[in-house]
Length: 126
Image (tube, rainbow, N blue to C red; front, top):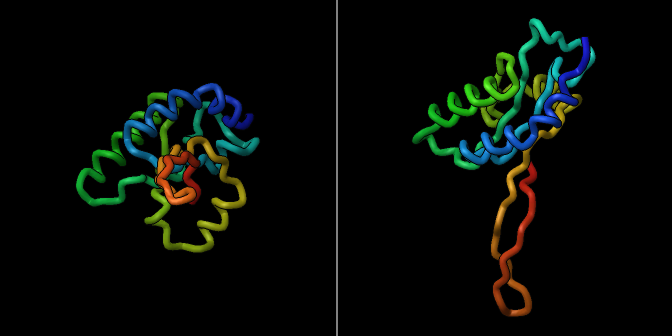
């Protein structure tokens, strides 16, 4: 048994393509995928997702589309947990102890610089 983290690094660009397609702000992996008890034959891959578009319109398409796409990329069943839907603080603490970022969307925003407006880039933080 071994961690799947190193394999996710090799798949990072394909995962990023999926995240951009389904408008993901941030994607983290947690659970056995980041620990030594990952079993390549039986384990699923747990992802924590935050979508940039939180509107209910198209939410099911984004969720199931991303989940199915991630399953195809990683070659394992995927449990996709939406960050905003988690209400249990103990579960959030358990995730926070072991989560590993896989994708953070590049965000463009406008800022005022010396009386003029400039476009800046940054990475989303959650």
